[in-house]
Length: 272
Image 1 (tube, rainbow, N blue to C red):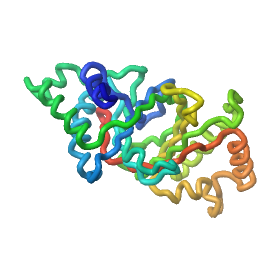
Image 2 (image 1 turned 90 degrees about the vertical axis):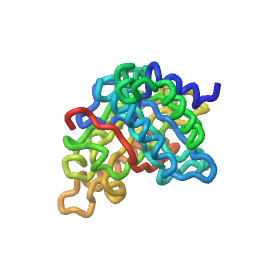
Image 3 (image 1 turned 45 degrees about the vertical axis):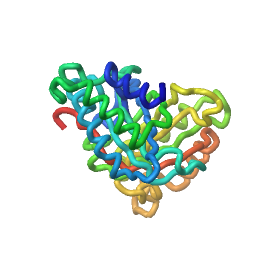
């Protein structure tokens, strides 16, 4: 059975997880499913939107029931991937457990009435015909820092860096703590909306090329170009200290891939 069909059938009984965008710091261990989609020849993101908005409706029901933390459609803007056309957008789904739990049968009945099976079969067909899944990854989000008002609707860009340790098995916690502390200071100064760190769970092999991922959520790419506001009378971090941190980071991690995404569609938590 093709990957996409297997994935979508599993949605009926358990459901996707996605990139965590809660308004509060994530609890210990959130699991993130990244589902990579490639548009069929001749189609654009506009063709995919009706399909993804249907998935959003289903995922929103799961979020409302507390079975899912969130679902997000993120469209690729830039990538360092040599294969520029490997995928076009990624749906990110977040859960508190490493399982795919979705909207309850009762919630699905409220959406589709007596036509749940027929509607889901049609949605799966439309999905395959528009932007089939080309790969999927499962990540464990183990750390992060978020602005109190953080939400997708005030976020323009997500900058993702896939990394591996230069020395396999080497300790990286001290450098990670410094990166997180800088993120916290940037959030206080309005230079960053959120930052998180995740470890690849599945598939996890040396041929994958990366083992960790960091995500920065910003309003403007200029916030990434000037992360410590060096031209400010009161920079977030002295230039020498920032240079040293960059050196330590480069000696610890190799950035295998960097990508920039824009939020297109997303669910919201009840009460937000």
